[in-house]
Image 1 (tube, rainbow, N blue to C red):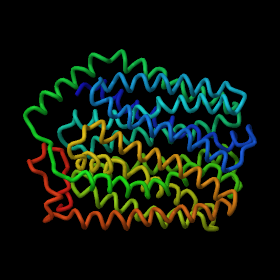
Image 2 (cartoon, helix red, strand yellow):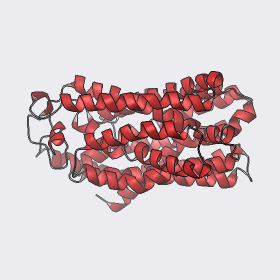
Image 3 (cartoon, rainbow, N blue to C red):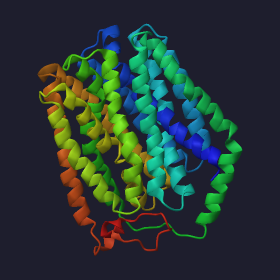
Image 4 (tube, rainbow, N blue to C red):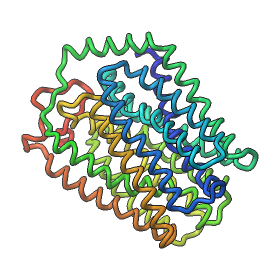
Length: 408
């Protein structure tokens, strides 16, 4: 694959991930600006993520029929333009409308690029996904650090504009590199004619796996989205310091995602996902308890490892279990379900926090992670080798992980 396309693909992941987290990063000051309650703030996050969910599915499915790089490029331009427009709106209703339109663009990237990676990568998919996810965690870490530096000097509206500008450049680059993307896609299509990727994993198991992931994301994303607010309101940190601290989540992902990605090429990605899910539950619960301030970075770092480091394992499993679905469609379901979960968990978290406070809400939202780990363990037992449901009809192409990876 051409090196320039790989760099552009990975850099695009970083820019898109920043779009997912720019609103939570600015949430403490946006709360003050519009005099919002926690429940209203959660509803704002819910609406934004719900739009991402709907268009993740729609655009993921469309990417099986139209050039993926054009869908991604258009998404960057839409997201950037309307995030900038949102920052210029002085009224809450206009701000929300622009934010929701921006969500359409944000939803275009992940299902499309995951399918692109899968169809253009023949071997060591875990390592490739690991490096890809690293760029996302690196970008978010840099974003939180920069926001911490800028919050003392610039208005939040200006910070959103500055954060959105790279998306404009990325969208134009995806269009200008159109020829190179087409060459790589044609080469991948030609190679696939000589190999079979078909497996007979029932779609029911695929959707059961996605449901297991909803428990995981329901808990962890509510906590991540409200961490800056939690650190300001409960831990007494300044907004800029809270932004630095939240960046530690993604520092953990930055360091360990490539490692866990490479491990997915050696060990079962199911087990790696189970480990990172099972550990997240006690870590979040412990972080909500009174403790010395010096322990906070450790909890944030380890939760970041569990949150972001599981990305390569999930990506490999989704594609290995997708059955007869198109690549873009499979990841469209994956991202849509995640975004739906993302959208409702902050709303429910905010509503609960209005009644019982942020600390108790964090403890409550750690419980779905325990449920996810237990459900995943049960699903792994169902799919153990020996059951015809877990085997492919044809030998998978090198780099394709089938459910039989459980036998490693």
